[in-house]
Image (cartoon, rainbow, N blue to C red):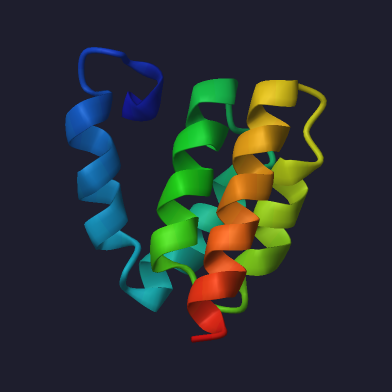
Length: 88
């Protein structure tokens, strides 16, 4: 929930990014995507685009279809980034 805090987001996002490099942690994070707040979805899209593998595509696609245009845009950007990284 620290991704919601502007004060701690700069610490929480890199920390969660490192944790999500571990597949078991990343799989547990997926459980929270559906109920995430706007700020959490924005952060998770960025994090998963860097740390995710093929299984992250479905999660980021879900974020990219969000009703909030800012979240959807970040999701699309993350999806392109993840697919590009996986195709290298």
